Image 1 (cartoon, rainbow over the protein chains, first blue to last red):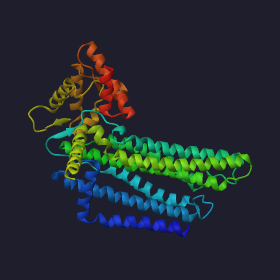
Image 2 (tube, rainbow over the protein chains, first blue to last red; image 1 turned 90 degrees about the vertical axis):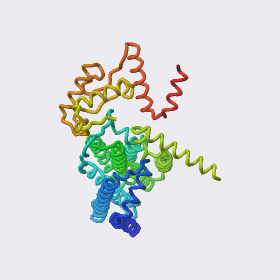
Image 3 (cartoon, rainbow over the protein chains, first blue to last red; image 1 turned 180 degrees about the vertical axis):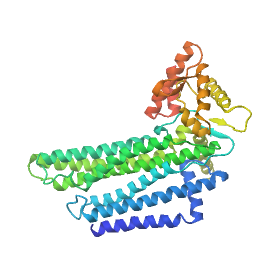
Image 4 (cartoon, rainbow over the protein chains, first blue to last red; image 1 turned 135 degrees about the vertical axis):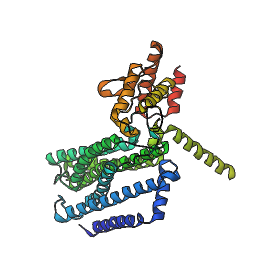
Length: 317
Length: 115
């Protein structure tokens, strides 16, 4: 690992340590629950606040432990030479370190969501009359984005192998850190689909509609964390393989030049697509997708409140 | 939304049956809507699976819901044959609109124009 990769590793480790310190501060926990409520579009009822705080701490703590383990595995893999890295300056090493961080956090989020025991409410119980599925919790950009990113990574891997077999590159770009990231992305996608179904199969005992809505919000958040791993690994892996392909292409002869420019265009297109997807994701608030699907009345009321606030602000100017 | 009060004098299966029946009658649960599995609803409401199964059985006998093998239990279309066909067409349209990710207002506008 070169000094720049070590620097990134230390920064990510500091993020984990900072998170671990913050989660111990009661004021931060309260603040984080309110912030989560703002993000998912729900108010925090006073009687639910302690339970929500406990769940928030549990989720964050498990994600931090998972991120630390993932980061550790990535560093050990790079240091021990298990990873097929050809050059020490390979940019894919950055992505492997980031990938370890996010994959660890995703796996831990899945384990926490599957292992946490729901509290059994006393008295009246509430349940939804209709069945739900993963489309009610994950916006298309998250659900299809993860599959699309992994598919893109696999296509890039196959293309790199084909180009190498045709003798147009000095080495097979698929046999690089980028290729490994794509393969881990495929495994992460399969596991995320399985974990998502398992999470949705779990019971939702609720003593009030607000409790059920919050459980939906936290489920949606867990599912989004889980699909983050294949989403990142697929797209980063594709970029890393394309980057290596550019490096390995012999820019001689028509085939070599064509391969170089196709790889360069592919790299630019994937990069632009990622930026556009990030922009669309911010604009469409996928964290409130569950609200629009399962709690239309709450979503409509929140929209009306926002519109009234904006109108009042305009009138006050 | 379904509510079960374990302290009520009304048996839980009856509470469930009445609420589901009223929601189907009022159209809150549209024809074709898939209901949760017996096991899932029992776990959510803290009831024995047999209690939920009994409520579902009686609703099925009354023509409010139907079991479609692997597709689970769904709400039956209500009313005469014409009304039933209309409800099923509405369900199919709503499912397609959800698949396409089109907004509610836009979808309703298209129906208005088409009618």
